[in-house]
Image (cartoon, rainbow, N blue to C red; front, side, top):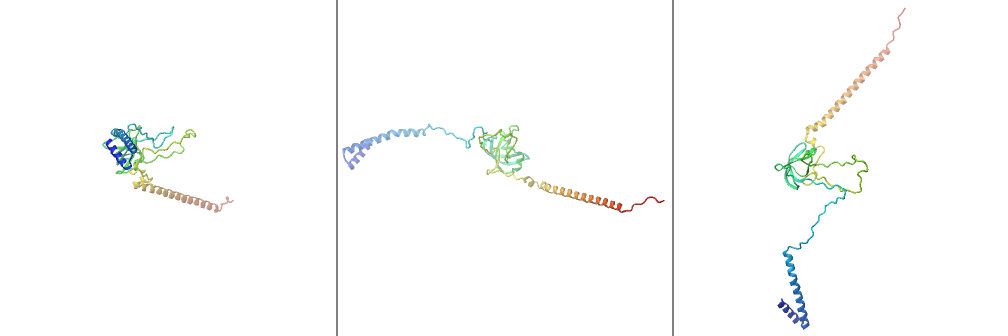
Length: 251
């Protein structure tokens, strides 16, 4: 390193010249080389150790802050995607494709999982894939889910002023929901049950109409009969009044 420093200093001296310049160049080069030599072991040591170790751990916060006194957000026991292979009046059987959260090992039977829906089971189509969020029922011990949201109770049986509070609690979506593969709500048309059962649809439309016609016909017949009877009674009274009254016995 001293050789390099002396050569550089000689080159500078030739271009500028002077003993003072030579002394300054040697001093500057010596300081620079010393700084480089002192810094290189520290850099090598940091590279060998894989970086700085004393990094503070990252603390993650919830996406939605829940104020004190508010109920926490609900969490489903298991979230999975699966294809419906069978349904009945209240349940659906899924062939699980992927599990996104939680575990279903306790209710898994050969890759098939039964989920209780109740009335909502009629809205699920066999052969269609859904995203299912379900939780275990405490009493029944089966997974339960839903395709429709619960109606909002605007009044209820609460006493006015008892549950009032200044704290505004965030509203969370129900985690026990079943969605389509695209993340949309499962269609639940009001007349879907009647559309699938054509005989029931015909019965629901025709039978009331026939009953109404029969009732109207009976009422019309009763009215005509009553009017005829009343007219006959009136004619009989008029005839009786128009007849001359017979006098008493002649002597």
